Image 1 (cartoon, rainbow, N blue to C red):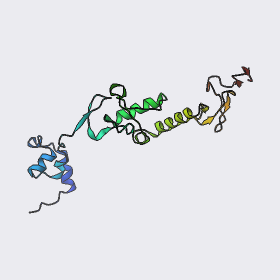
Image 2: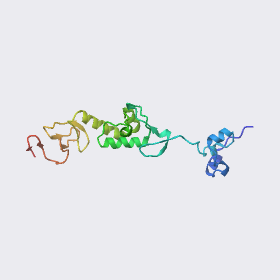
Image 3: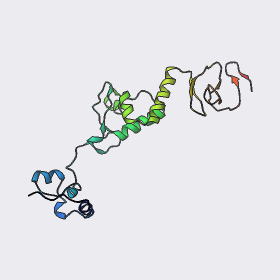
Image 4: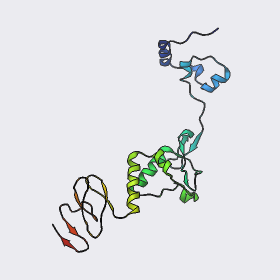
Length: 195
């Protein structure tokens, strides 16, 4: 005999009630294995069977394997698993410190050769961190790139002619010192003050 479908009101009421003590030891998997009839709103509130975890070497926590991530570049894929959140923070801190070559955090302990790939960065990082990484990468490729201290526009400069004017906002700044001495135009190599 088929049971009548549960109405929204019954489902809502079932969700509000505490679970009966006899159900506390059940998991969804156990209930299904035993063929026990438990209405779906109550079944949805039963805990899932124990999930597999791993030990993150960054936060030192046991974490659900669904949150595991490893680097895929260089000598990868890496054998070390880390929380997505931990690796994301690891990359963000490295990029903020102008780090462009990110290896597995376990490199020094276990000589792991895995590195962060472009796809790793796209999966783990915010647009802001990716943009910062690309800006630093561009500056590393050509040491004459500079960021405007006002609008962050990146443009080529010349170390022999320190006075720069931003192509985007018109801000004047120094190739060597950014905005350390606003309003002063000069040439470092010649030591001439034009201001």
